[in-house]
Length: 266
Image 1: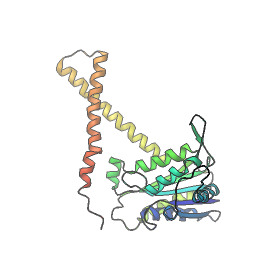
Image 2: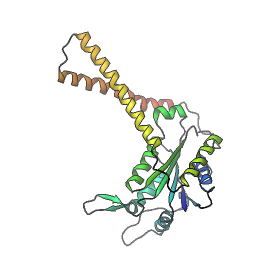
Image 3: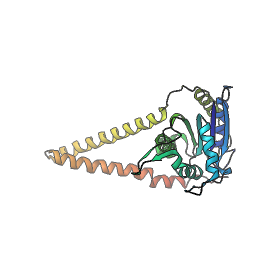
Image 4: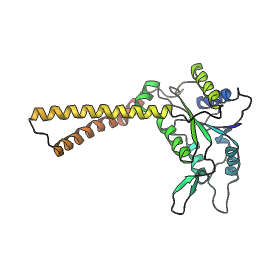
């Protein structure tokens, strides 16, 4: 069995690289597995065109096809995956999908392979839980690879990496265990963290709806107005929109204000 470990960061020895190394270390505890690690910065990755193929893409394509599992590690840069990983996905899009004459896309030659996604971010665990800083890169990787027909079997996040030099031992142990788990070729598709994100979204919407209905009931009672269907709907939409706007303001404008108090990287 073969795994391809893909590092998409500016530094090979940074936290994202250490996360990748810890995961592959767990995987190779099973002697049946071989791992090849590639550093995207070492490759001149660019698009190819009809009549002008890019030999680098062909080389990487062979590595991807030969691997049973892809382990992809990218730091969270500016709220998303690294530019190296984005460029890699952009240039491989014609290989990931089959395009119908109508422009509709279908899974291509990599369908059925398994993958694990790893990311690291500056935000601490509480801040990351509130602002979901690590969500966009993981969700983008999922969108690209799940649409390409791959199966997700693992995911991990390391928070608070702004001044971190070495990966905490607890995270090393967690990633080593993850590597051991994915060594099992029959491991089930894993949606633990994805499901968790949907659960958080569900309870957020449920809470906002509860607050909206409470304010709506109080407003009708205070004004002594009879609640008709369309009036109730209009008031609900206005209150819900107002609350949602406040939440979005906190998650965007206020987030930037918080960032200015962060110390600079030494």
